[in-house]
Image 1 (cartoon, one colour):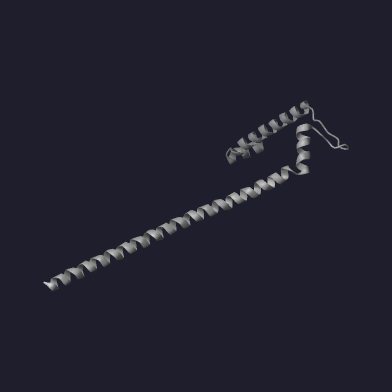
Image 2 (cartoon, one colour):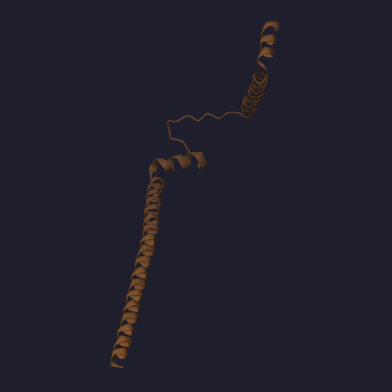
Length: 132
């Protein structure tokens, strides 16, 4: 009977040892997975930090440009119509601008008609070349 009790005790110890080993393996796997997940999060956050630092530098440069004298002068010229004392301003009349726009439109129409001609078959282009 003692032998049977010793066998039962040995069997329970083996089962307990196997369960403890599986539990330790489970905890180790869980900690490895958590570590991997945290590293991925850290990597994403580091890339976001790098992007935000680039944006911060760009905004600082833009702020520096907006505070500069050449920018202020340019805006004063554009919005307020100011000029330097020795500078001459040329105003283009609206009629000249209209003529320029009409010429530009005509040039665009000529260009589109040329591209239509170029899309014709080659033998028609040769025929037009010799007959015109």
